[in-house]
Length: 250
Image (cartoon, rainbow, N blue to C red):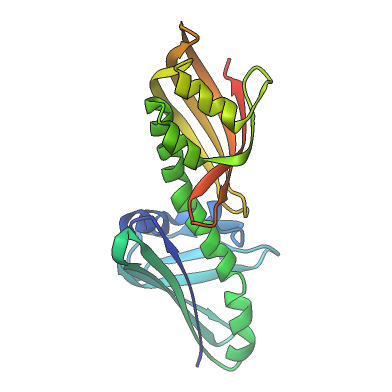
């Protein structure tokens, strides 16, 4: 038997991880190794799914174990080789969660198949982590903007932030913070209308549509803006904004 384990830790809850795992049609949003996927029934033991990978190969797998918020295992048989991958979720102290892919392969070509099966698991798990954590980072930013919480914004915005606003002006981090600190910019409402996360890249990107209501320089305004944001993980594990571009939605 050939075995292998890959794992990551995330600030997401087990329930949040499970929500992505059980949304099989959505796997390709965070797994670049999936071209197309279809689940033939409920996300439950005994249900099969077909998955097309780059290069047009199509594999059929069967769910063998499904335990909500804990684990699911799928089985794939290729040329007499049985591949079992257990996707495990483990709650850790301090609100952290460990996600592991545990692989067992048995068959005449197990040693050859093993590295091919698990070769992209570190990248897949990294993309999963980003897809889980970036929406929380966006919500943290929204709340900080709404409260003009300069201390929180200082942690969220990278020192080398490149921010182009909807008027084409480049705003630095110190300038952005001063707008909030001085009261020049105040928000009464910051409402997320739509959020898309592109988590496959090393620097995850979001496209977010936001409805704003507030005042600037004492003048009231309402605006519907779309932001493209690029996030980077700092050494302390916190996600920071490095690039922001905004446009008015008309």
